[in-house]
Image (cartoon, rainbow, N blue to C red; front, side, top):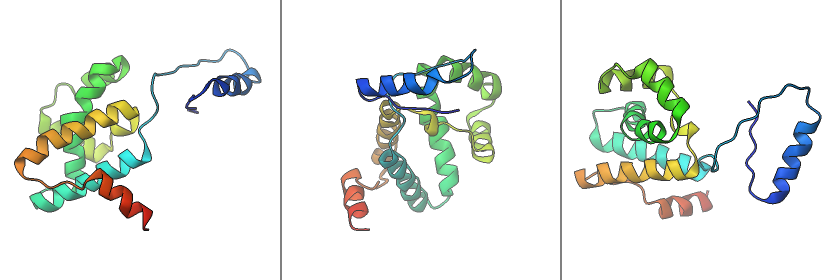
Length: 150
């Protein structure tokens, strides 16, 4: 499905031009906010690697799936009716571990559905959980400098 992030009034005109040549009927939907940023995506994956390496008993994919179920799903369920209905119908009857395995094996999209604001909440929740347990997570500012020198 095509998407377009509207950041200024000129983008609304551009969207109107894109839609004006389409055959009708046409269904259009929108959501408030922009999709997660590539910087947020890179940071989350770096944190999955940091956590996996320090725990030693979970793969990166297991950490990723656990974070999606523990932190991402509650955010999306609270803010997106369609996600809540779909999640509850498909995975709601499963316990946490079964949900984690299903998310990992099926590559269920969670963070890729998030806005920048939701992804910020996801990353904040990860920090609140893991930092008190002694897990050292890459500093977002340090990651910016790493990218600059590549």
